[in-house]
Length: 437
Ligand code: S3P
Image (cartoon, rainbow, N blue to C red; front, side, top):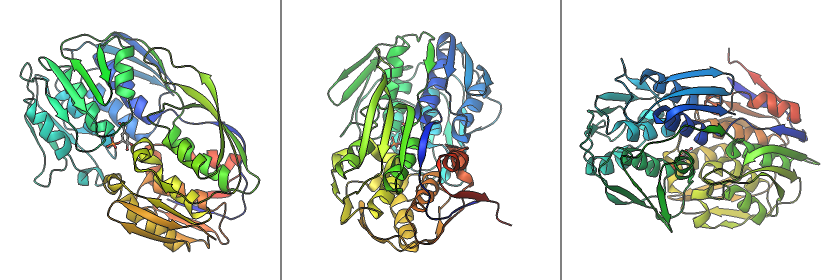
């Protein structure tokens, strides 16, 4: 499947975004092992989160879904059962890494697999600390999936772990393993990463201690089921924020989007570039909950900036969209401290640089970043590298290109935002979705 975008569109109107992907995974995982029924509204109906839903069912959890509404019949902390076959997480690194933590201390063995892209992603980052806790876990020789877990019920012990990279997936994996460990599991981050797991655990009445860059929990407590309203996904909203900033005369209202400060670096960065973005709080964060807002975005001139490295983990998924904003800004935008972008669904530094050059924008990568020279966008054909966020980002480039922008290999948009093209077209992007014949 490919996107073809004709130049000259304007984005106007208002839209809600699909449910937050990170929170949808976590709602399933915590709901599964809670006592009682967890009802979820606003669940993300996309391949990544449906893979985690399938995994929970395979582990013996009753999950009923009607559209974006779930009813999860929690089995309690010791109620998961041995699945029949391997658990397949498709494209989802979050699903696989978080569930690996959940399963490290179970009584039964499991095998966790993924698609071609996920099968290239590094798992040593969870294998080593999980082993230090007593888990019996193997990866391929290259440190990638499949993961083979032998089960280690009552054998895990809490550790004090200093993470070499700021990764919410690693942190969450260890905290989930820590639920089943003897004593305290303590994780220290080199820089803040999204804190959804900590917040959601607390909202399930699980005691979590947070102090500065450290989060700690003691194993053995129980989780109490609750109702969860998942806000719109800021990472999906990011494409529309950038589209509204760069599209001539554009103005958008994006409703009910999660604006957790450990996640909303993209808003700070775009504002630093001169972007007109207002956040109207829609729901306050009650204890352990997620703050939600409506984003109002107006088109305007953007300027290139040096993006502060400490903002990188707070906007880690938004760099494809930010690169398109940079391509439309005056001057040079420099990203550094972003080597993690090389181990996402694709090597996003190279995928963005290649794509930008293909549409006439000067871009140069370094080991941990990229320099982008803003200016005119010519248009042309871009390869998404099978990466959903690369595909959606380049679709927005069509708002400012002289010639059409064609993005090849877009089927993976269904991993996070299946109705992206329809939503974008309704708001004014001149996009069509074509099957390659
Ligand atoms: C996520 C954490 C991030 C992010 C991913 C979702 C999460 O990964 O890129 O899309 O839900 O915890 P890292 O923690 O590996 O940076």
